[in-house]
Image (cartoon, helix red, strand yellow):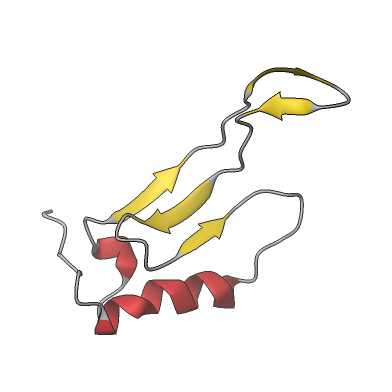
Length: 75
């Protein structure tokens, strides 16, 4: 079975605290960390203060089985 974790297109995007702004308007460019497919098959935000069920991440990772863009990472 293939999983996205072994694909060259899987990417971890760290949280970005944003730039400038205020308490009222928030910071410009602020974003949560996320796991995503660079081929845009899926994206899962990892922040926001609520737990993400493992089943949600597992379902995304299993999409590699039928993905036409899957390319194995070199070890």
